[in-house]
Image (cartoon, rainbow over all chains, first blue to last red; front, side):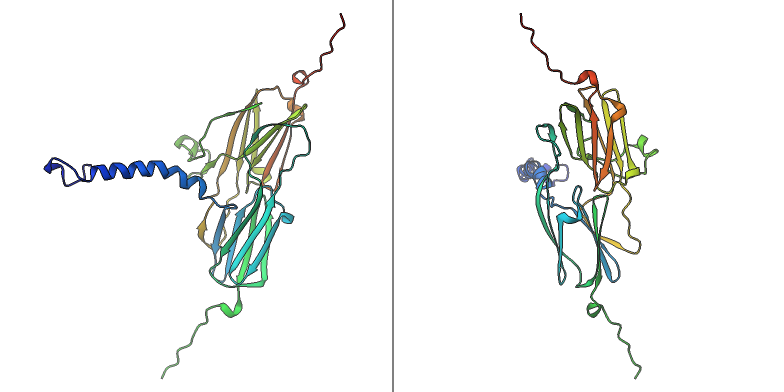
Length: 145
Length: 135
């Protein structure tokens, strides 16, 4: 309120608007943070002619994930199943999510499908991909006149 | 029963006193956990993606179970991070167990980023069937 130019007039026409705005921010502030998370969360690393995608997939094995590549879109689909060995157990806490998941990641360039490596490491899937040879930028020589 | 001891909210930054012990500016996460109880044991499964087997620390003091995990730093030399949806960090969670645990037979395994803990109940704490005597 101190920033307002109106206090010398004795009233502030924007005070009500600002109050409403902060009220709205408070109402919806927690909302977006809770729902905006896609599964699995993905990090993207960009090299000169290659790209690395890492995804947090705890409890998922190689057999549970399907990777497919079309031009520059990497699709990641799979399913997480609860693994309980015994029946008749009393659940104290179930916080882990199960079910199928699917994500498509747009990559910055087209990928050579022959040069893709994917590996699992402690619940993190790492996919290394190389840029298509024909798609790489070419250096153009400038000839002197 | 396993009651959670609230040490952290969803995520926190290490405080100044801790920063001396840990690597600075690493976030600490609350790992999601499934806990179930059978007649003989309590089983805890906690999600800790990115934590190598030697980065896990489990302590049981009286009935307070503390799980800690340090994820390996995920750096790629020569690469630039362009999209960041998850961060490397540490995992920490504390539970208070309502049963006495046989500490000599605790089993812990780490597979695919999931910590699997089997805590067998102590002999005295196990449920016993009580026979009715005919009067």
